[in-house]
Image (cartoon, rainbow, N blue to C red; front, side, top):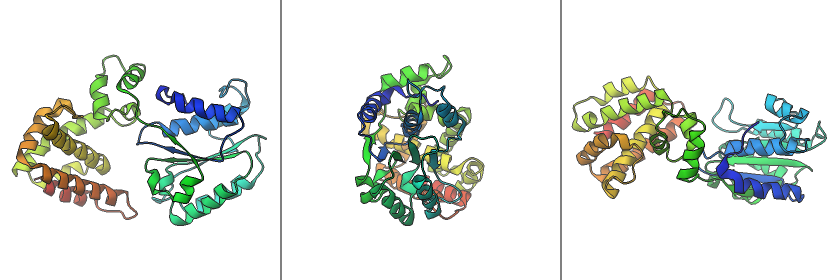
Length: 319
């Protein structure tokens, strides 16, 4: 079963009180930054509602075993499939599922993640379900960018904000997850204070890529290295990860200039970042962030851009 994250305890307690009091809404919107644990919370809520044991979720009853196995007939997960949007066909299947009687005689729970990827057709179809919800059915929307949802969808859901844990909460939790030799504070800093990101994204390959990318920053700015050559090397990696790392390094260079180096994520790379900050103005670096964001938008859009060409265009702007 999915373990409750300690920094979500207060939000979890409020929801449990609603369930016990019989005041559970038919629609919930879990909102918060990426890697804040929204999917964990949604999975825990589904397990709680479907469990038929005494201590919920018990992890032992038949319902809990079905949830763990991913085969519970009254639990539906709607997510991105082949396209980069949640399509109307998926919502039509949800509507058909929602109108059926619960096979296990209890709640029916559907999670939609990421809900901000609903297109207009699918969002309007979902709205009809939320306006006339079947009994004992919960639709749980999960979103990093809730403002992208239709206002009418947001108004039909109870919003639960799941934010960033405190530094102390994050460090304590990671101490129980990582090897004792890990530099937890550095990893947490690189991850922007998000402990789940440390576990899910910041592995040895990520750290190697970060060092390699940072080694190109100053030579590119000085014109000592060709953007085309660097793009050819970096395109062998996951392009979205490269762009995200570059965004973080450039952001750190701006923070270094504006704060005197007090608030940068990649503090172990401060010397390289400082060298780059001396080579380009703050306004240039802000424009570079815009270019990186645009490239990420193209990468995550409905088209399939050439990753190496995207990197070439961005690396030209680094200089």
